[in-house]
Image (cartoon, rainbow, N blue to C red; front, side):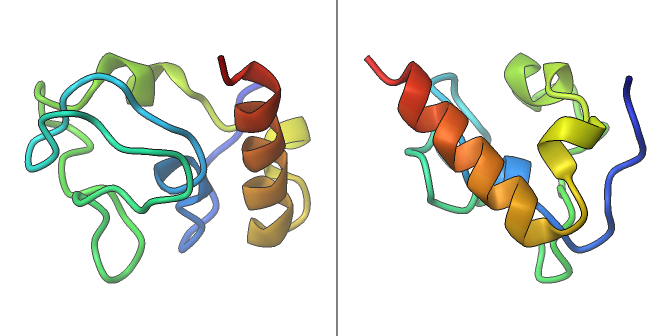
Length: 86
């Protein structure tokens, strides 16, 4: 069940790889690298922009992924990235 994003988390903007273009990152981004669109306060600068990659909009916060804190979310998404890497 989707939940609201945790403020100052940004795990989904750091842990996963993104293979589609991102404004400022035409080749996407590797896993573990913060997205160039991540602001200093850990928010997405292009959240409502149509140039935001579809994969970003498709990833919705949920209790299992986000857990109790940012550390859990980073670990969960990092493990998912490892498990699904080619």
